[in-house]
Image 1 (cartoon, rainbow, N blue to C red):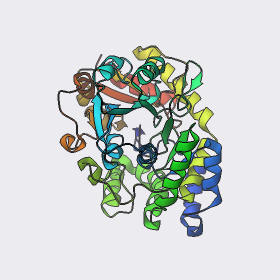
Image 2: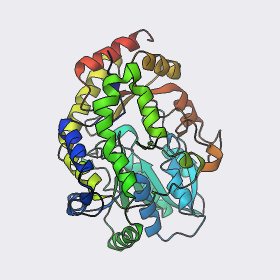
Image 3: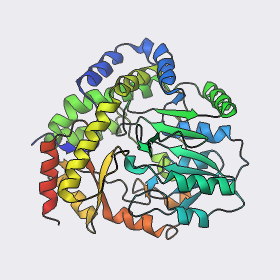
Image 4: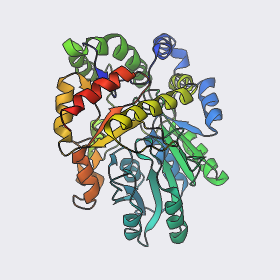
Length: 397
């Protein structure tokens, strides 16, 4: 097996997505401003940006909060959430998680509310909807603004209602290993007209990312699927590192983000070329999510676990005391299972002090970061692939 079973590395792309990206490489006049950016926003009734980070910055900017105001958010997340808080001149207060749902622990949330607390960012981790009834009640009692982080959960529901429709605003991510992918991309939705107007003004000031950055994203699905993945076990993995070092491809997380610093391409609008990729994927959303549910059901039947029909299972996450060892051995066997999250604030080499996280403040999140691993559910994972993963895991049971 030369091509790996992979949870990331352009997981959502199908043949039409790859050809679309390839054609766009030779159409630079369509890269930045264009009509498809507008069409994508109309589909969502929202505002598009080049990432979830830029999207969250737009929301925070629209709230008009005083510098130093506290934003409550869960640990067991990516630095892409606390960084925009930091970049906006605000303070992240990290809340522990529920070990069963991987989402914010409502009891710890209440404990960490202070007079400086202004908003709560609720993450629907791995496509599993958070306990919105309890969270909404807490927000109402303490006059907190509710923001939904739907980066993992486009299409998921809570008690029959779409996630992203419970708070003042919500943001989505279209990065390379999210529900739909344009390699980079994000969207903001809100039900508040005054916030919408401020987000529109923020978007107008952002401008578009540079053409070289756009080209890097267009090259990603092409090089990944035509060159890197087919040769991964032989030399593809080394090509990936080389292309990133030569800046032919961009990394998912810039080194500056791991130190709480802002890369120059945030915040920016969503370029038209990436909106074209995102819109093509958005048309497949229901099929993608149905496939994820079917693969998750297969894992649950063989490995155990309770499923909820409203969840979309971006990744099927299991716990094991030797999770890191399992991930390492699987990778050696060309099965690239997931490592979200091997640190309470991922990636693992994030400087926690620079992000404002204090070790020991969220013990359950820290425990989960040592004991969780994720199994792929995306459209390119077949039941045969899932069975191979299950067979590999049986030796660890």
